[in-house]
Amino acid sequence: MLDNIKSGNANLAGANILIGSGLALKLGVNVGDKITLLTPEISSSIIGIQPRFKRFTLGGIFDAGINEYDNNLAFIHLNQAQKLYNMKSLVSGIRLKVDDLFEARRITNQVVKKLGNDRYYGTDWTQKKANFIKALNLEKQMIGIILSLIIAVAAFNIVSMMVMVVTDKKADIAILKTIGMTPKRIVKLFFYQGITIGIVGITFGVILGVLLSLNIESVVSGIESILGFQFFPKDVFYINRFPSEIHLSDVIKVAVGAFVLVILAAIYPAKRAGKVEIAKVLNHE
Image (cartoon, rainbow, N blue to C red; front, side):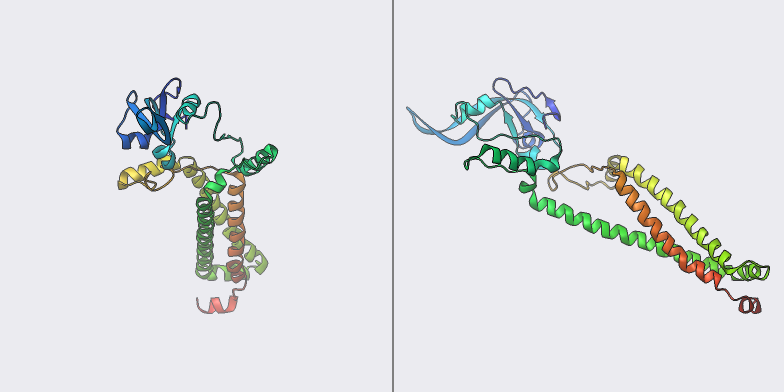
């Protein structure tokens, strides 16, 4: 977040405060304006009991691209927070940044275990966003099913096209048989034709898919500007962009799966071509 400064800077020295772009918009403030931070803690003075508050100068505005953070987070220096909450040199919590986000839970459990005190506890992002993660996993499964159905339909189209070719070329097949071509060679001929069509389709599909994945944000931005609406409005979703990441293993799995379906789709029409009966076909010609 501190790396995505929209205006100002991330310097928290003195009485500076850093807030999210959504929060700045709600408050109607810009860099250099004064912000009064009020806490639920109370303090006693000669004028009675009153809440603790302190005025800060807005030093910077960040835009993390995540609605929850941009609308709710503010940062001040640790020393200022300790004074505001009257905690002296104590802290209420420590946030750790890990290199592998999927190791967060294991590392959290290790840290809490090493502290060896019931007063300490730890939470990680998978616990805080459990429902969100479940929703993402469900969406991933549904997308996988939908893509599988699309590939199955494409395989069915190959079957239909090859059957039409066989039907249209029955006379030619019969002639080939009369001049000595064996049914086995005819089966191979049509089988390889189906495989060739499938390989060409898979190659173009993989290339197009990778190119779209690499430029998905530009493509989505262009579609949004044409249609006049956002696919991921910040006031609804956690993000306002369309991130993508290409995994070679996923590309290989999809390509291999599609190729297997192509092989299966080419078998039936090829066998049908090999079973064409010469006498029946030539009698109808």
